Length: 379
Image (tube, rainbow, N blue to C red; front, side, top):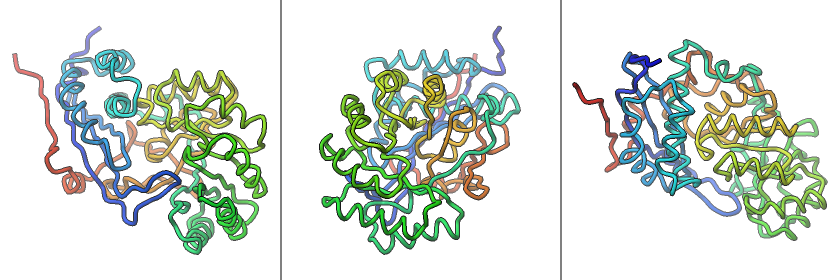
């Protein structure tokens, strides 16, 4: 039955660009900015939902254009309660562009806004609306571990994160030209933080299968939880082979852009820990679906980046083991992620609870890509 109060009567898109200083580096790239395509939907009752995706400095204009020119006009006068149905409709509308990171990120911004609106409408925190499996999940800190940090800085920041900030899990980027340098960096951090701190490493798809086998065997000496993206994300045969020749858990999923890709990854035994990225997989709808697929296969999940939002997904499902902490959005938020020691906690307000600072958004809105608002025509 139609509920006219739930009809979407306003849709706004904006693109912001946040400088990252100093630049952050991994084995394949350095980036000096973060882009956030942001969507705000308003229903006929005046309730609002906010969604967003992200890029690491490029592609944001294409995402913004897709939202502004194609997707947002199509959501007007639609029933905001039909989240899954509406997202299916929008995905079909741009079928020739999917799956892919640009289209998935654009769709994600709308999907997240719809789910935020659903929580606001229900007066319920979104993590409870989606399942409420737990009210906290462990955080691991990746920000200390960028590959372009000098060794002394890497060790000092790792020690500080554990002893001062309460983190009990850290992730270090690897992929130096010389494996001895990777091993030295990991060994020095392990020595600094002690045996009880969980350590992971991330090669960012930079190795061949033979290089990965050789290097992982060297890194196994440092009591690591997982090796993340040692190979190109689509090399499922290579990941399966890694499982036969190395002992570290294989983690990945941030570069998979559909639920079907996760299904195939699970079917072929390619990964031991799955890391859906809410933005890159197309939103909360698909991220939750990927988590449930993993649960059916008795596999854990650790949603990738955007901790303020990923904690909602992680706490909704029963098989989450971690959420990743990288400070990305804090400069445009009214408050940071909720933390209690080594745990992230979801916001308890209706919806996802993420509150943007309007003045900060205006300050970082990309010149020439100003927000555009669509309103339902009066009859």
